[in-house]
Length: 323
Ligand SMILES: [Zn+2]
Image 1 (spheres, protein in one colour):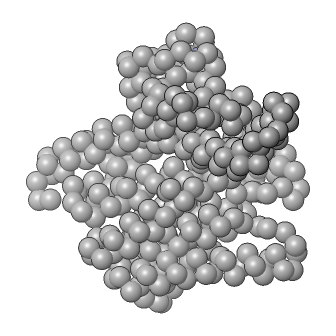
Image 2 (tube, protein in one colour):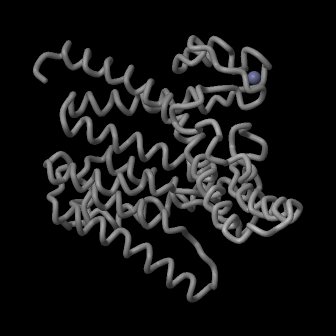
Image 3 (spheres, protein in one colour):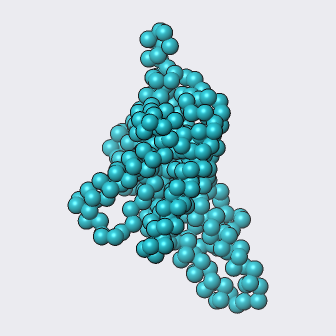
């Protein structure tokens, strides 16, 4: 990029695309856990239905309630979404679709469809002063903040890499990582639908020479990342009888290993542990986090991923004298 005005134009374009992608990420963060919950409820219902045939309607209803209650345990916020399946009866095949595209966005409080002009990233929220146009319910400032963060991310990536293969790869990496951090924060889930593509994406980007990490280094990063946390998890469970992490955390570190290479694994674990410990301490002071309560590890792993990306994708391992 020799021409500075071209660099500015590319960056401005990337910011606009980032704002729109951020708006989509808000939908992903809100809906993906609920889509998974619906899928699990349907599977439970199908499993229960196998043995139902001869049961009375009252018995069937009792089973429905049990399965529905199990599904509700994973609900992010109680009563937050009128569309989420709370009973497998609602999750039947003739149900209206619930996915990332449909139905259109609606207010979680009153269910009114959101008008297109209020759906414009950041500006819509500012125009409404953070309240629903129909019922005046408060709309979280997190929505415009996620849009702004994604816009900034895409802008910085375009400034550094331009509109190139590496630029596209790192923008996709950052957007996926942000969605994972927020979903884990809200629900303690790290969906395979995001972690696994992030692993494959890292390996493919490495094969293309877009990440500055050669393919064997990336492959061992993915394998080593998964095995490292798996080993920690098993040891922790053996000695304390508790589960300190989930399998999603192993897959997330595998993904980071694929993007940054195996030499970056130990720095990534150190940075994320440090961030998690500091944040956990702060939460204990500020919001009175209960002693021994589970704090998700995923958001801090994701944060370490952003640190590694900002430092320079191949810098972390080199700082360790490795790679
Ligand atoms: Zn409303």
